[in-house]
Image (tube, rainbow over all chains, first blue to last red; front, side, top):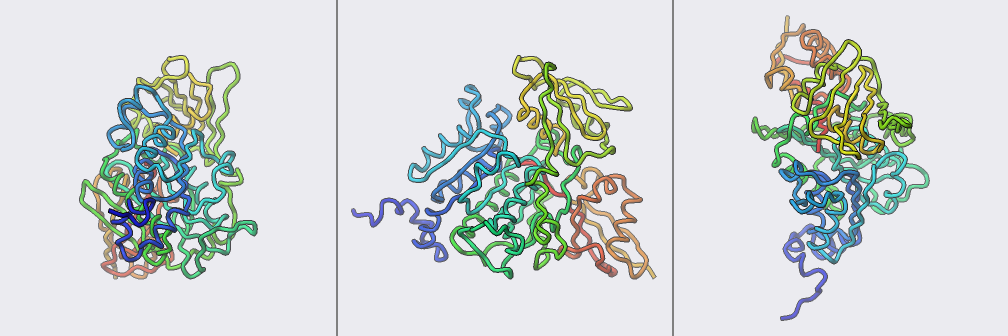
Length: 373
Length: 83
């Protein structure tokens, strides 16, 4: 038996799809997808794009695999938990076993305005596997300023949401030279056309505070992966220009028509103000010298955080009390480098001190999980 | 003359309010912005999230100057964060 092309034969069933074919498969092989965040969404997306034959996949994630991830994060197993391996590295190993013909770059890092330049050169599409809004607005800034497609996805509780963003060329930096391009007419609204401002810290529930249903995440990840495959194979007109919203507990699936074009006054894709990329809107995490603690100062600080509501969501995770000025308590399950339980002190302007660690990235993870950004 | 609109709540707004749908009566020639002002006065959870919500009228994204009509369905959509 002869096989026409060993490298492509494995994709035979995908190439049978008339809009993909061998030409589309070649395009996938030449493409580079960046997956930021490799939790539930990111690992499902990485699995799908690896099997689909996207030639280069870069994964950036700052966390380690934990036992509570296994319920929904499909690339990880019990051995990963025992060895406390970083998610990005665990993903790389699994993906290499699934498809050895592609390149997977894994980076254990906090994707931020400070670090993002290391990862975005040559990227054709950005896939959102994040658990916080601060970094999503950064991804939106990067996508718009570089003219790269950005596939937003989010899932929490029993609900999920996804939207594909093909940024308008008007806000693209002069230096940007994306490999894939589209016309102004094909451009979509960006994340900030729809949601102008990131939700203030402490107002959005997280998977760690209200839980998450596995099938919601895999559905949203599938939707994101399909959008990426359409974009990378040149099938731009097949990309859903609506916003998907699902709730698998109340059996709702809705697609909202978005504005046909980006908003005329969008601060990001019309006025090219990249506040999240240039640091004005970035939160700060600073190790407090000699105190075994990190202070988190959120970007969108205001005096109105409802500390009682945050305490209500933290109830299952430790013993927390609220005074007129602050929320304070100790986590039952989160420990720092020296094995002691982490302590959280949270002020109503969103500022927090996380005691028991000196690692800013770890403290940001804890803040994103339990306070929510 | 008043008009009656259905309000659809999404994601954690449903949990915060305790039901997925509301119905409100509004004066004729009301804009989406007026309707949201009314909801903000009635529900603290909507007040807290107002600046982060996206809105749709009859399943199409809508800006706050959209004029409402009797029988319109308004969706209040908070961004979904986790993943």
